Length: 286
Length: 291
Image: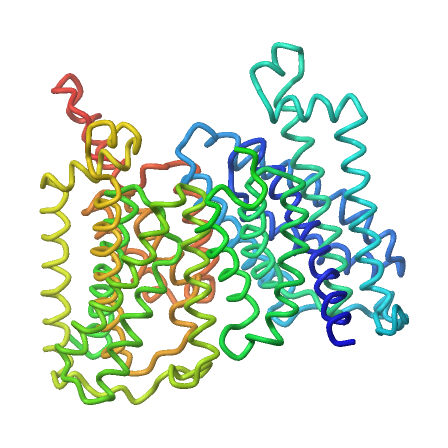
């Protein structure tokens, strides 16, 4: 029974990682930027979700407002921060992004206080029985939301005109431009969608722990980087699989080798081992 | 000089050694590392533990330096497998791995770290003199490397690895050398820090430390020795001189890192060479020192 419990717990975490990492991998696929500040948007999403939910009493309103505003914030970050330095060597954008993330964390600390905020009446906290294990509604909600959003994203990119233009731009920006697709619009769309996903993930993570802290972006951000590297950088399918694998490995690893390594170290040990065997990531076609 | 000034000067010099080490790897040889604090930490933990086991000051420092350099050599091997963004994340992972191992192992002090590290046996001013001399030697060493044949080879690897290989440079050997030297310097700095602070904990060597060392290099101008010297002094002292700033230290760090990269990607070195070019308008058009 322990195995099943660990597996389910790992998959729940994996879904959370997936929703965060997809936004990151979309940005990388399009612009070749490691967008560390993505985790700042994840934390911003959690804050906005909590504030709106506490104010209106409705979680759906919180999710919606948070996703919209954070999506816009993501577009703003692209316009103000990344667009002017796209032609620089890659480390420039990476360091700028780390700087931005640190500054965002500090702004959260200064504005919302260092100890974190909690929900007045946290929604989705009642217990659910599933295959003999006990889960909270928030766990289940997280999984349903992740599957739903990723399915919608896949529909958007496979079946709609916008999605075709998007994928064309990722594959070959110049050719896409020749066919009349505006690459700048695609970038804005990319940042909006990725950031909105991060915001939703942020809200659900804050429901799991009933607290929103300034530093909550830290661990997911570095882990999401590990995941997109494992998934082959820019490859959405690889990213999803890597997220679930990491979630499960962490869940089992914490039990069996937790004495030697803590949870975060397990994630990075896995990353280093796999990269040494497959330097291009697990699922990259390149 | 009062005790406070002495300890500030010591800290600045220690940071210079560690930042110049990273400059060797990232600046000269173009291999980005987001895990420099791990080697700083390896040096500090090795020196602290071996000093507690009875090794004298110099021996403990050398041992820490050697072990950090060895670890750097091993991590450098990854740079032969992965490049650029992949390497950045791998080295970041090494940093988290180091912290994770230290936290979970009691003989390394666990969460609490190591305290009551033996004294170096030198008075405070004498210790400062030793650190200053080591920082000066490190600076000279970096300048020498930059002018040497190896420096040119590093530059070629940083510029375009494949072309360097076509020119029959042994790219792997140069990368490994850069990693071993740079991380050994970090180890030396770590050992000095252990004797200076006399108590260390995992938090001293986390990702934030890696980033602050990287910011010293990036703000100074990646690859420029003098730029790194100046920015290390500025970034170490700035929070100390203004009590207001101290609370906002991280915010300033983040904003500075972002601002410099966004508006001024060549750092302080880019500024001085830019000014130089403005003054010497119409003079010889040799390229200024940059990366």
